[in-house]
Image (tube, helix red, strand yellow):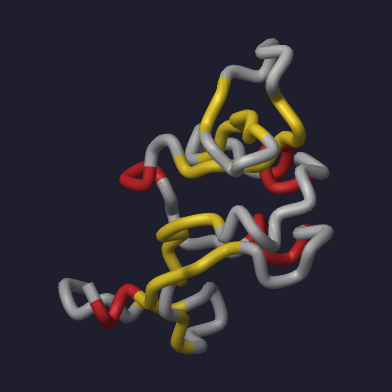
Length: 98
């Protein structure tokens, strides 16, 4: 189906919600989304006190957050949003809007 709509096993309509980005201000760095995603969509990165990107082992790192590293691998299952400790740190886009 090319229109972005699919059906579940019982024939119910289903529209995938693809992960677009992570809101770094909301993310608490719990890592649940990284653990639940089996498609390599997510990774982690460090942030400095000034909210600048840094390596995880950098001594300037203030906190760790999830980040999208392979947007194209997302299958739209929404598992990351279901387990999110911050509830709402992910920004998704409907398959109908692509």
